[in-house]
Amino acid sequence: MAVLVTGGGGYIGSHMVWALIDAGEEVVVIDRLSTGFRWAIAPEARFYEGDIADQDLMRRIFSENNVDAIIHFAGSIVVPESVADPLGYYENNTVKSRALIASAVEAGIPHFVFSSTAAVYGTPKVLEPVTEDLPLAPESPYGSSKLMTEIMLRDTANAHDFTYTALRYFNVAGADPKGRSGQSSALATHLIKVACATALGKRESMNVFGTDYPTPDGTCVRDYIHVWDLAQAHLMALKRMRAGGGSLAANCGYGRGFSVLEVLEAVKKVNGSDFPVTFAERRPGDPAMIVANPGLAKRELGWVPQYDDLEGIISSALDWERHLMRKNSY
Ligand code: UDP
Image 1 (cartoon, rainbow, N blue to C red):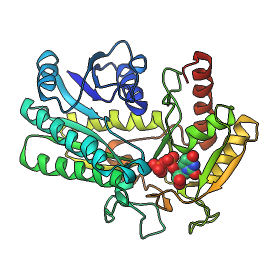
Image 2: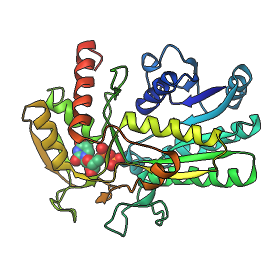
Image 3: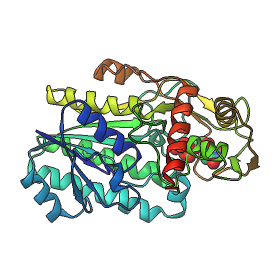
Image 4: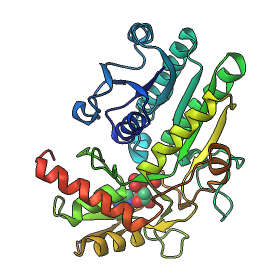
């Protein structure tokens, strides 16, 4: 049996491919290489360059490989960009996911893991870490585009012989502990990536978006999770579905939050350097604070995070950033 990874040339997808290979799985990747990289895809994986909404290509992939599960990462991921280009986000994340799900149903693929997001919750009305039964109220087109895919998966699972796991990622950072992949996009906008690039002098300075949020230090609070722990959660979701477990939507976070300022302090400490920071306006679409309650993933998937350590996450992100500098690919 093979696992098809969509977006396997991207940040999280490339880690997933390595995690599957480490676990002895046969891996097939589809990526149109719009933001991902061919070199980031493990050579052991069979690669198809193309679009997940190309139903002829999908038919070919399913006829040439014995796929029993799809892990779907391909999509757009930047909250403020989604505010500026909502239709682009609904196209990439919702419309194309619909086409992929249709191809999966047509080919009789029984299992599907979907990269969903904490953004489906918007700003929770409660101060505690969020559980999956809270109201789903995305505040950005990005969050809505992902929630719509969750809804399509739910309804598809009700109508067909099809089981899905939607993993709601909190803030993913860090790099493969074996150094085989990391966050490689020069255009990446995520906090830890930008802060590491600034600490290493690849950027002159960076912004803190919003200092007047109703949080302890006025900056947004997020639950930062190591990409390798996240990849392991997908492996466990796959195992659970193959063993007959039903559909599930589960949070992937550690259950504790750090503010933007705390993250920047940690980056400065781990790198042993200071760097300039500009206090800027709030960024559109950002909820003030969101932290996961990971209880369901732990209970249902048997997920045991190994890398719950902000400085360790930052240290691995910095190592990858140095690696990119040596490769001169940035
Ligand atoms: N952020 C920031 N400066 C940056 C990038 C991000 O202040 O250069 C803030 C952002 O406004 C948010 C938090 O860091 O409050 C996490 O943002 P990120 O883009 O990493 O992830 P998101 O939570 O949007 O998925």
